[in-house]
Structure formats: structure tokens, C-alpha cells
Amino acid sequence: MAPAYQLSTMAGKITALKVKKRNKNRVSVYLDGRYAFSLAAIEAAKLKRGQFLSDEDIERLRERDSLEKARDRALRFLSYRPRSEAEMRRYLQDTGVPKPIEEEVIRRLTAVGLLDDLAFARYWVENRETFKPRSLRMLRYELRQKGLSEEVIAQALEGLDEEESAYRLALQRGRRLIRLDHQTFRRKLGDYLARRGLPYEIVNPILERVWRELRAEEVTDEATGSTETAE
Image 1 (cartoon, one colour):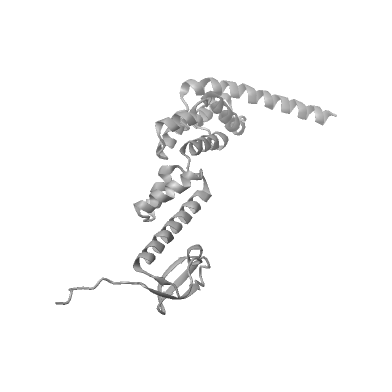
Image 2 (tube, rainbow, N blue to C red):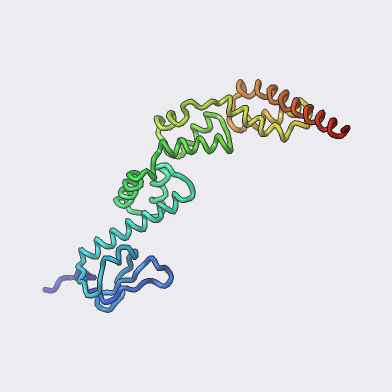
């Protein structure tokens, strides 16, 4: 009695290897005169016309190709900015990468230093400190959202001077507000710092310090301008 079904097979002899017109990095593989599958050019370069491919050979080639495509996606994702391991895992999962390939991509990226949670955390903190200073509480929250461990977060935040960060931020913002009256200046600058998670006990003394320093600058500039005009 004949079996109810037959297992399909793709095994065959390579009759052509054609570079794709729309993607020069991909090569179409033809077996026994028919299109069978495509591979990354780097993998296709290992093949030659007349070579016989078994089903097992084809499966291995496809697995390597899937790994290569996933790695390329991961590298593109990293090209915008560094990533935490958790961010990379979420990205690979969202793009439909199978778990075994995800693990291998993570392993390879980690091995060459492209995935390093502590380095990422320090990058994040330094970037925030330079461009968008905020409180330790908000920084800690952001790093947790990136999937970082408490140990890594603690190391990244170690030695960070929250008062100095608040002062620099207040000075930067205060220059835009210094022509306001004293009360309005304090209120607007205080609200701005509070929105960045900075606590009252740090913000309050800084408001007066920044007001005095910026007002002194204003007086000096005005005096200098008057002297130059008189000359």
C-alpha cells in the first residue's frame, strides 16, 4: 500500500548561481534548472555549479543564512546608538528571529564587545549628563526600562554628583530666564528642574545661587557696554 504522503525534497545539483538585480548582496540558487532559494553572497561564494546539495546541506545553508540576516539586522540596530542586551533581544524577537538564532547573535555581539550592558549604561548616563541632565531617580528609572540589572545601574551611577548636574542644568536654563523678575525666575526655573526629577532640597538653594551669578553677569555686561559706548 502506497504511503498517504511523500516527504518533499529539495535536494539537487546546482545549475546556476545568480546575483539578484535588486540586492547585489543576495544570490539566487537554482537546483536542477529551477529556483530553489537565496543566500547571502558571502555564503553563496562557497558553492559552485555542478555541486550536489542534499536536504541536510540545504537546511544548514538556510540556517547560516538566517543567522547572517539576523546579525545584519542587529548591526543596523546598533548603528543608531549603543543598545542594552535586553533591547537587542526585544528587537530580534519583534522581527521574528527564532530563539536559537537570537542566542547565537547575542553571543557573537557580546564576544566582540558590541553588546556590553555596563558600557551601555555608562554611555547613557554620560549622554544624559551632557545633553539632558536629570535626577538620579529618573536616570535609574530609564536604565531599568532598558532592562539593566540593579548591579549594573549602581556601577553606572557611582560617583555621579547630582547637585553639580542640577547646578549646570539650572545655569544653562537660567540664562534664558534671567530678564524675568526674581520671583518669576525662581518659579519657572524651579518648575523646570522639578520636571527632571530633581528634589526640592537640591533645587531650592541652587535657584538663589544661579540668580545671583547670572544677575552679576548681567550687571558686568551692562557696565562693560556702557564703558565701550563712552569711549
